[in-house]
Length: 221
Image (tube, rainbow, N blue to C red; front, top):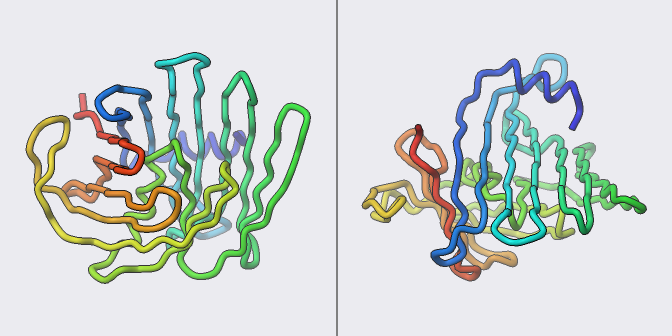
């Protein structure tokens, strides 16, 4: 993680922050803390930086995933710094957007590889095991389905997703009944992802039925 980006995040008051519990069926498998902040982009621009840490510590070895994704004012991805703390295979992932492509470098203990993803139209960066990154997918949602390209750098995938705002519906949040804004993300390896936002537009729940995953935000302390 660059010292400049750390300093920028520290100086900005968070727009949103909190902790999610990640469950496989009913068993807790991880906790994910995040912080969403406004940051300067370039000389005069502004954007957002999402810093998350997801810690999988219910089994051994303990694995921690810590991405920082910076997006421009239009929410298009600009850069990624991603630390994978896994004793079996520690990894650092660096991503940068430039001239119609998103270049990813994968830095391991004894190896380095790079890949370029073509970028055209609306694009989001996701990960199979870090769920607050879906907040930028939620920002793309409209009443009619919107086609979005998803880059999954750690898995080396590029997918086409359809995102739609289906309105306010009834669900549960931490076992309590709730009426939340419901967004669906269809396509790709996960097939279908349900996103739920509260009245303030904050991401509070993610469900992936094909993987039996439920990710719920803990109430503020």
